[in-house]
Length: 470
Image 1 (cartoon, one colour):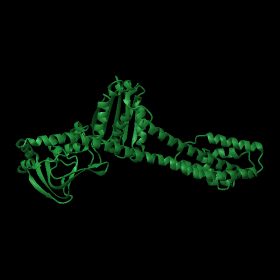
Image 2 (cartoon, one colour):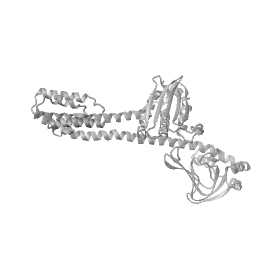
Image 3 (cartoon, one colour):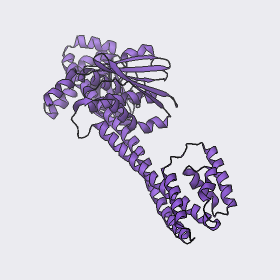
Image 4 (tube, one colour):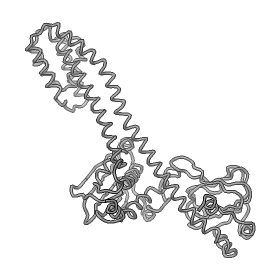
């Protein structure tokens, strides 16, 4: 179908004969610029025909107002809400001065019977518009998810990158101080055995993993060591004490470190030791930051299955872990605790790996949105007969019983207008059920909501695709 033909099918114009048939069943409204005919998320059951001027249709997507179309004279709108008797999927406003024919639901039915030709114009357009609206919204939903992940990832990468840059800057200064301390140490005339003993102390401390202590205990330790260094007349005793405590030195070890040194050599030896430990600490900080960046890059590759076949045997736990990494910033923003209960018998499955990560993203992201600050998410994986079973549970307020049977319906959302598209769970359901031959179900009550995913190990479209590709 050509573009023009498709546009004509989506937005057909009613000829004057059909408009005249509808006029007795409705009433004419005159609108000023920006006046709303209907609003997104609000229930409506009215069919509108533009008689004069234009009506702009917009939808909130990912927090932004997106123009869907602009209706010209002879075109109609509101038919989806009339037929479904549900909330409007978009907002219609006059673009400049406009005149429309307003036909309520009870009169629309009578008009259809009075003018059967209307069916041949409205129903084909309806058949085209709803799938197109779902495809557009689905694409927007994926882009919105990608935007959230990109923003979180940028934040995740910025932290270790900034830390590495900061440590590198401090390292330049610390290395200069260490070189000067080494020169001063050489000028003290220490014996070779004393220098070797000092070097052994440095190596032993560099390999030691400092104890995890609370700030108050650390401050007390620094005070005790600093006071001992003051008694030894060490220059900058508190700075030296801080470096020693960071390396895990206990107060009682100070005497052992300096016991074999002459009085004049204590200051120089401790200063060299402190500066060397500072350099060592900054190098470790840079290594950890670079390692964190590498971990994030690997998580991105794992999440997107970059350079890998779209259909393959996978461990769902790996995909969930990658998703948690990608959503790490959002989880920390609300101090969400994630508890992973992975059973060792969780089977590998044949699947569209990238698609399943979209499922984990939607389910976990929804759980985060539903939780208060400090909430908890529990993720369980296990074997269940020929399937892998995955449970994503949160301790939020729950989903009301009366809407649970609609939770997977397209465009249905419990979020405010503009905050949710109503397609996240619909997309997840299609991926699990239609693409993988699995099952996605919900149990919810106040204080507990659990989505359960069952994925067959060797069934569904994914398995057939893998056999074809191999």
